[in-house]
Length: 326
Ligand SMILES: NC(=O)c1ccc[n+]([C@@H]2O[C@H](COP(=O)([O-])OP(=O)(O)OC[C@H]3O[C@@H](n4cnc5c(N)ncnc54)[C@H](O)[C@@H]3O)[C@@H](O)[C@H]2O)c1
Figure 1: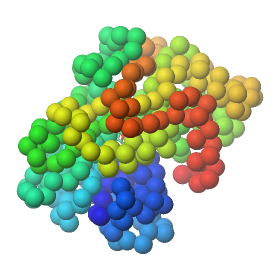
Figure 2: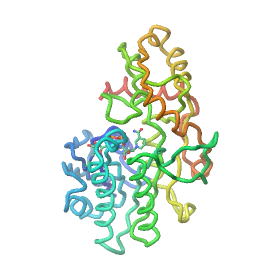
Figure 3: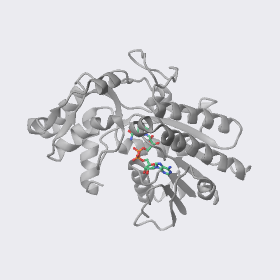
Figure 4: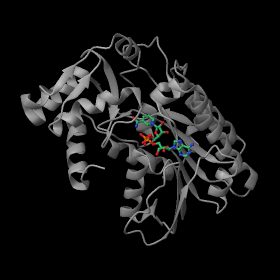
């Protein structure tokens, strides 16, 4: 089996590579080759016996996607993206990477033509949804994004569904929860504080909280995110029908509930490291994000995640202490 990962140098990409190398296979098949593409040079994973092609490339640049799929990877994890804050701040970059890059990838697959029809796992986001929301968002809720990033994700979901309908690829779009606790340095995602208010105090450092404690979010750990990707790459997609994208399971937690979990794990001294710096614009923005989902479609397909926020904190402590934070 040959696997291509775009965005392989990113947070989820690196964890996916680690898991694939540890498993030495995917869906019961041995992995012979990995193509790792990122605009930042991806590292070759130590301990992998197969062939690795590390491509430092911009997916949206003409020729990059063609080159990445030339060896006809069986499974493509398409993670490369400019994240929410950056896509909002830089309109051109957001559309170029998130939309044009995705279309370039899908069209490179199309140009190879039948019988080539790879499994494509695309990472969408809760940003696909826009307020006003019901108390709980179910699988039939409309996607009306209110950010450029969310709009790019929804356009990609539509492209994925159409290319799948035409038999060009066998695709699934997984709408990831907020991935928490994000290890390492913060990125430009507007939602970064959901992780930093835990990650920094757990490391004895101060963190800034720009929103009030009632703000609610839908979370899953990096470990769960990798589990979603692996599961999405291996299951039969026929039950999806024409609705190729779906929300992933997670844990609904308010910021206050996150802080309670931190207190249970690391005590009051850690909680005191959270400095409140209210940002009314951020607060208003995060008051209109979806914080609670009913993900029975994903459950029926066998996707699983943590069921408590304490388990998410525990997953971080186990995984990052084992790795040394990267
Ligand atoms: N982390 C989350 O909470 C979350 C939530 C929902 C969806 N997602 C999605 O999951 C995917 C992975 O997220 P992540 O947290 O690992 O993000 P990340 O920012 O750590 O990784 C994204 C990677 O894409 C790469 N990239 C950016 N522009 C590129 C280009 N033009 N060509 C090639 N590579 C490029 C970046 O260098 C980076 O390594 C993204 O598609 C993201 O939108 C993440």
